[in-house]
Image (cartoon, rainbow, N blue to C red):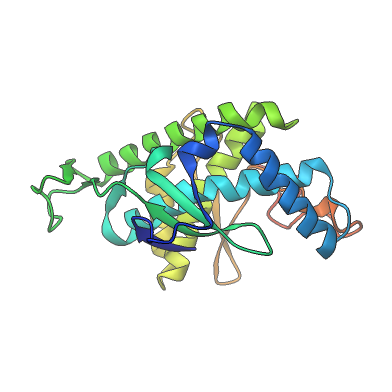
Length: 240
């Protein structure tokens, strides 16, 4: 996913997270569009699969934005739903771009912009990680309050998906930045242990010269391809 500050003049295709979370009908429409794409690609999609996909995709919006800025800039942006938007791709209806609509951020004392009106300074990386975790958790709580009544997922599953969004995003930030190990270290800083309501600390583990992780949640993709079974990182396969 690409990132930008502010929306383009042509806002077609952009979805404001705050508006989406204000009415669960938006998620019903998203899942209906997804079901059509999945049906054309794999065959009929169960409700659990469309719910799992949308849950994972949505939580990646605040998670990936926060992880990239933390990893590369040591900054934490506003993660309030009203200050985030994403552009929906077609025909596969997933978020392909993210926009942050508030230019304020939290940073460290040595940030070049520390002391400017847009910056709030915290003393060290541990404090910065705590700000990120708190802002993401607040956004995830609003998502869960809207989305939970529309799916047959328990709260543990929903918070497990939120945990995955943070941990996955840090791994990807390091991988795409050319230093996967640095992303792993940032994930450990952000998720040093189970800090409720998140369901675990970072689950990174070495794998074939690189890094992978055990997911906390299931996306239910395996229900589309009968006989293939869950993904190798699924909690149904890898025990804690």
